[in-house]
Image (cartoon, rainbow, N blue to C red):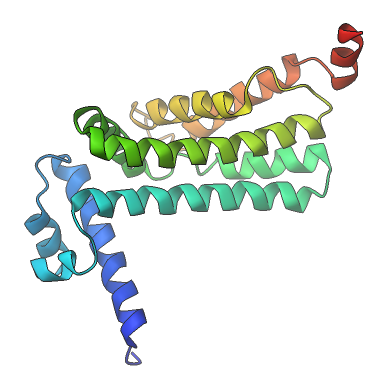
Length: 209
């Protein structure tokens, strides 16, 4: 393995710490997973953590933000590849939906962080703002999908994104019986139903005149 430079070594350390924090918090819960537990699970000293993250909260925030960024990138790519074709766009969204709950640990982490936000106002301020930015971005993509189908969005797009995310999070924690992509299919069913039931843009325009 080639020797890593300083930046590459730091990036690798951060990645290992994030993954260790994820495992420890899923296993023990946010409150019980200590900084020392995370450091030991990653194979580092406490100093390695504090030279990369100010606290445990910062590690998990970065993990969630990475996941949110990857989610937006995949949906954006699906819509871009469709090149304005509604059916192709929906096919891309369907492919993404199959992977929504493929990692149940993320659902557990989201619940753990949400509970911690209820108990820590300082953490809640940063965590909630990150979620608002993510929902607004997803809302923009949802509005674009409705537009491709010639439909009017039945409400604030970011609120629809919030509702679908809450549904997905709840399904991630429910028993699947081995059907790991069930949550994504259910979320997609609700999204398709919203699009189907929404008035066409032309009909909406006529109703205002």
